[in-house]
Image (tube, rainbow, N blue to C red):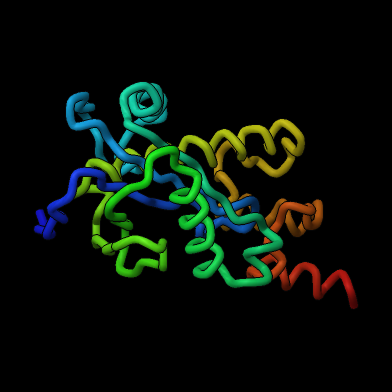
Length: 199
């Protein structure tokens, strides 16, 4: 396991995102400040947990964290800014929405953004930092729920299965049924279909 230098402050906020790779929907972020007097066991990278276990942990995080918030950037913002800058915008929105001001922000990955307070990036942070693990779980469940809702509106696309990622089934559905308003038009597979339709 990699080591990281944990800031010597009390109010540490963990931030993570879900949804940079999909072709549709918002990129969703979460920010979490945990309560050291109410530890939550089993926190880890959301991708390593079953859907059932994620749902259980979401309830515990919402009940026991000092505070938590979600942030997002919509497809139009992703198309305008690019996915990296839109992700950073969504992260800033999540931190700004917290009811308690953190003293330090730890972001999963290798880069951070200007939150107006000290921040560090932690590679593999969703495995190493409980606050980031909690954020990854909240963001994953929130975005998966949105994909489930989109699936009910457009079952022919199969969003409940692939969650909007560019699988063969999703690409085939775009080719057959066209581009939805929620698709990210700047992403190459979507852009190519739109270019073909405009010819």
